[in-house]
Length: 288
Image (tube, rainbow, N blue to C red; front, side, top):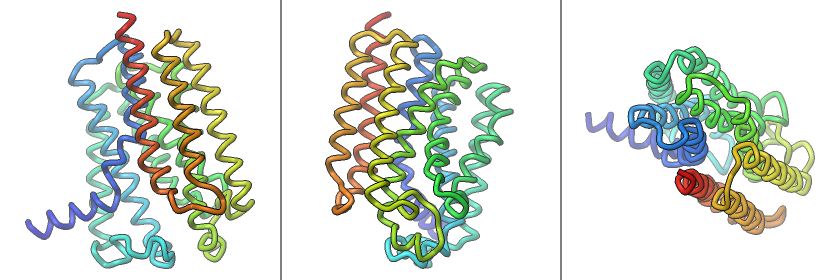
């Protein structure tokens, strides 16, 4: 048991499970809007279980699928599998377990979430292979996070409202844009390994401009989203705060200086998602 606990703890560290917060606030935003307030505690619990297990499953599978690539990359060669801290078999078992937990959570929510859950898993796990075939793989990661608001809406309502797809598209561009920036770290390795990405295909300067345009488009979609759901002052202030935080993130890094990329990617993205949720939640409750 101590050995199992050590391996499990190492796995959680490897997948950075605490970064589940990236998409979770957007899912909770959709849940609040779908319920016109607070959903039931039962629904919130199973949404949380589904979100954390889905991301854990996807990240573990990514580390399993990329273990050989990680071993050849100076930036990632000390990850748990190439460093010998975990076996591929153990990580694959963890992937299966978290995948089953995700399916169980979807079944506990409603029939439609259960029916759609295999499609979600295909998107989440398929992302790991996209960079082997297309430089547009960033949009695959973006979609994996962008599904969260639509999935949460379905979890609450048992049906889909087309308006929530605007938030899903915004999250897709937000996450995809930062994946473009994050992949700049592996520019040289990707070229040598024959992997595809926007930085590898078009260069670092083009990658930065692509990410900026994606984030500007994300803000435009948030404005549209606010109009569709008739945001009041607090909601609009939330979008303004997201715009300022995005500008700050982009100021942290440049094509010539990637040293603060981890701070921009991990810390600030969690702040952006949480701030947006807080302002939208305040907007809803001030109206009620």
